[in-house]
Structures are given as C-alpha cells and as structure tokens.
Amino acid sequence: MKSDITIKLERCKGCGICAAFCPKKVLAVDELGKIQVVNGEACIACGQCELRCPDYAIFVDKKEAAK
Image (cartoon, rainbow, N blue to C red):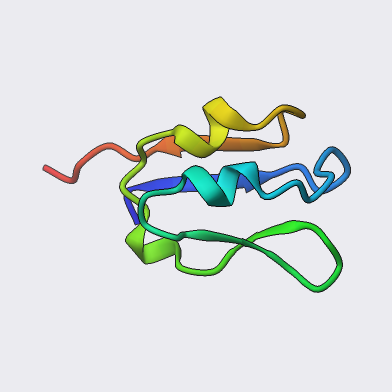
C-alpha cells in the first residue's frame, strides 16, 4: 500500500462517492452502510476519495518511498 487510509466512520454517511471515484476499487460500502477498505494493497494514493468525500470522512496519508 502506498498510503494509509483513515476513515472517520462517525462522519461517513455511506454515500459511496469515494468508492465510485477510486480508480483501483480500494473502497466499498459495507453491510452497515459505511465505507471500508477492501483492497488496500491496490491503493495508488491518488487522493480522489479524500477530495470527493462531501463529509470529510476519509483521509489519505501518502507513505514515503523506502530508500
């Protein structure tokens, strides 16, 4: 994973916008109607989920490349 994804579940209304804009299908809405990371290793840290979330419920912290 190229990033750490933090989800503030108390803010998430489960709209699915973040999952819809994720080019790698990293996120999905779970059975409780909240977003969850389902394929974290595929994350390319593009930040589209964070930018599109209307409730500021998801944050992408890009990891530094190991040297």
